[in-house]
Image (tube, rainbow, N blue to C red; front, side):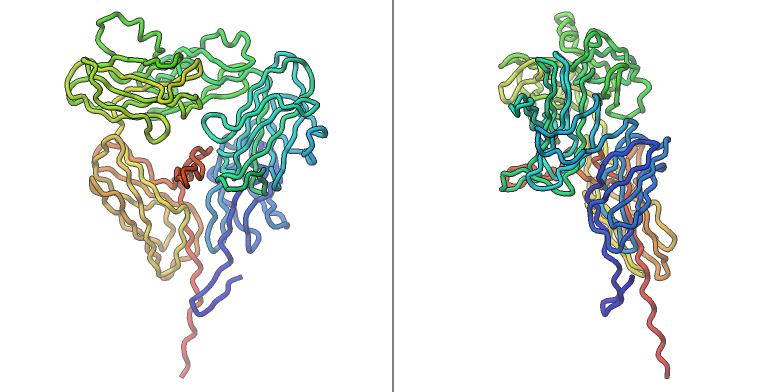
Length: 554
C-alpha cells in the first residue's frame, strides 16, 4: 500500500535481510528456508546473482521455498530482497553439490546429542538463543583423525564460534577457538580408541561486547563440516606456476599413502591474471585454494642448492620457506636492474599459518634498504625500486621470535601490477522521478597506477541517464550524477560502474566491499574475510511517481 502525505509520498518499508537459514542448499533440490530480517509488506521479491536459483514466497512472513536447478553454479552466491521502496544489502546463499544435513533439536545436552550417521558430513545449524550449545555425537575408529570446522564468521554470522570435543562422561578432549586465519574454529584430533565422542559448538558475540556469555540469535547461523577421511591442510610449494607444471606434495590428515605422492598440476589451464586457484586432488575430501604465480614456484631447499656465486634469480618467481628455529633468518638472493620496480609480498598469516613475518631488502654489502612487517593484512608487502643494477637479498624473519615446522610462508617477487581499485560505500540506491542522485566513487591506485580513466554507469533503465566522468591521474574520488526523467517508470535491478582507461591497463568495475577492517578500542570489528568479499552489482530502485495534483476548476 502507498500512503501520501504533506512531504510527498511514503512507500512500504525497505526490506532488510540479515541471513538465510539454512544458509546452504544442494543442487537439484527444493528447500524451505527462513529469511531473517524485516519484510513489510510481505512478500518481497528476490534477486540472485546467478540463474538456476528460484525463490518462491510462502504465506508465512519470512518463509521461502528455494528450487535449485541441477545446472546451477556450485559455490557462494549473493541474494537481495526488494520491493517498490528499495532493496536489502546482499547476503549469502551457499549452493553445494553435496547433501546437506540439518541440526536436530533438542541437542543442548551432550549426553542426549543426536548421532551423526556417517562422515564426511556437513550440517546447517544455528545457535538460536542466548546460552545455546549445540552437541553432536559421532563414532571414530582408533587412530582416526577427526577434522571439524565451523563456517560462521565467513558467512558474516554475528558470532565468534568455538569447537569443543568431549568423551561420553563430558571430559574435555580438545578445544579450538580460531583456525589461524579467521575467527572460525578448526579442530583436528586423533582418537586413541574406537568409540562415541561428542562435539559441541557454541560462540561469543561478534563484534565483541562486554558480556562474557554464550551468544545466540536467529542470525547466528553456521555450517559444521565433519570429516574422518583424507583432508589436505597445505601443499609444498604453497603456490602454482601459471607458466607451466608445478609438482605438489600434500600435507594434512588421514592421508596415508597419498602423503607420499607428488601431483603434477598444469598451471596454464587457469585464467590469465587470476591470483589464486582452487585445486582438489583425487581421493581427497576437500579442495584447497592456492596462490598462482607467473614464474617458477620454488622450495627453499632448491634455492639453497644454487651454486655459490651464481647470479640471483630474476623476477618473477616465488619461494616457499619455513622459519623452523627461533632466530632463524631466511635469505634469498635476487637480481634487479637500476630503476626496476618490483613488488615483494609474503603470504603466511593469510594462509592460516602462525608466522608473523617481517620482510627486508639488503644490498650486496648487507645494508638494509627497506623493511616491512605488515601490509594490507598481517603479512608484509613492499613496493620497491632498485637503486642500482646487481644482486640484492630478501630477508624473512619472525617478528615474534617464534618458530616451528608450521611457520610456513610464500615469498613472491614480481614486477608490479598497476591497478585501480574503485569502491562505493553504499550497495543500493533509490531515486524518484524528476530527481538527481549523486554517487561517489573512491579511487585507490595500487603499485604505481597513474592513468586517467573515464567512469560510466552501465545497466540503467529507460528514463535514467548519467554522464561519464573523467578521473585524472591523482584524483581520489569522483562523483557521478544519476538523473531520472520526470516520466521515469518504476524499476528495480542491478547496475554497474565501468572504467575506460586512457592506456592499455584493464580496470575492473567499481565494487561495494562487504568486508570491513575497522578497529574499535583496538578490537577488530566487522568481517575481514567473507565467502564473497565484494560485489560489482550495485542496486537501483526508481520509485513510483506520486500522483499529480488535480487541476483547479474555476
